Amino acid sequence: MEENLKKTCLYDKHVALGAKMSPFAGFMMPIEYSSIIDEHTAVRTTVGMFDVSHMGEIFVSGPDAERFVNHIFTNDVKGLEAGKVLYGMMLYPDGGVVDDLLVYRMTAENTWLLVVNASNIDKDVEWICGQTEGFDVKIDNASERWGQIALQGPKAEEIAERVLDMELSDLAFYTFKEITWYDAPLIASRTGYTGEDGFEFYAAPEVIVRLWDILLTDAHVKPCGLGCRDTLRFEAGLPLYGHELSPEISPIESGLGMFVKMDKEEFIGKEAVLKQKTEGTTKKVVGIELKEKAIPRAGYEVIADGRTVGVVTTGYHTISTDRSVCTALVEKAYSALDTEVEIKIRKKLFKAVVCKKRFYDKKYKK
Amino acid sequence: MAKTIEGLYYSESHEWVRVEGEYGYVGITDHAQQAMGNIVYVDMPEEGDEVEKDSDFGAVESVKAASDLIAPISGEVVEVNEALADAPELINKDAYENWIIKVKLSDASELEDLMNAEDYAAFCENEH
Image (cartoon, rainbow over all chains, first blue to last red; front, top):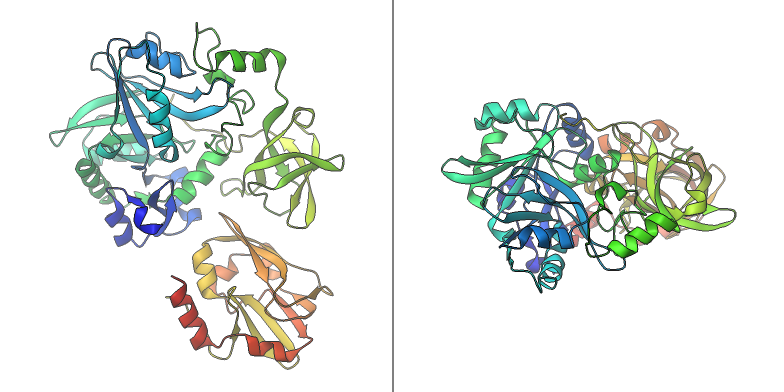
């Protein structure tokens, strides 16, 4: 099993830093270096650096590229300018989610970059290639030729500009630029998955290693593992594929309808999600807060009126706000704010109440 | 490297027992706390509860996940470590100083099934 695990270009750096390594999405990835709480707090207060080279990069190009991306993607990329990024999903015809992803409109003519979840790379490539009939497009899975580092936190801009000698303050949230850095192409994107301001840098593996080493020379830059990446995204109310989005949980059920553009002429899954939007769904992803100190975890049952009415999708005792909270997929009748429910934790039932699923206010650059 | 302490009894599920007369203090090992990372909650039984060897009696929760506590010995819980309710991270600071429950041993011969410090250290080594 272990010998089949892939390593990112930064694997040796993680081991040298003494990271706790663990398999994730087919890669040996750093879970934590010092502690999840320290790393989480660094991102909220100063800056943290993540190796996210396991993520997938898929290029779509060709004369029909824009029309094709709009066919497989829920958000509307029509007329999107180079340098802009959109978040959205690829759906199955029944409205279930193939994956959630970022779409980059590159400066090269008719060229788009799709950034997908590591765990879904093979499935996504197969899915995308299976939809190309009638479109003049080329699909290039470049995942192994690109690495990625996320630099996240309120000090990200200041430190990155100074240490990397890049001009980044001109980038607005969800925009990017393609630059040449040490004679190599690099994408600097003002995006992230933590609820803080910050950047995601994409480049060839050897360039990513250089970027990592240079960023680490700044004493404020704390290497952060996937452990706090999850606590950070969860607090900010950002979904994780396989938890809040899946083949069984549509973006409408997950409350992400704003990334699904119903006014688009067509896209795969449109009919199904349009029906969900107009007729309503039977289930909904909500936030739930426990009234007592215990921790809800993914898979635990949500109980009301003496029966199971839902299941926890992600849960933590939050680090930034000191609350025992979770997201859960519950029956519509129990999804209103302030609905009283219980969560079954081991053998006991704990009182809880439906709340907003954003547990921390995002601090993005305007 | 994870620490062990001579004179304690250790289980394969990474609990330890310190015997004082007819009582046993039970906690989790340094190896366990290192593997778990930041501990944020300890789900403890109540005084008067009976714990049964090899059955779960609560859980220790890190930021990431819950790990069941498995009783290494049987008996009545005569005291729980209330300090852990407010400061579960004490286990990260010193896993052997911060016991979780104090049990009145119902069958001292159960201790014979547990490992000594040396055997437990070797057991952890082989686990990897």
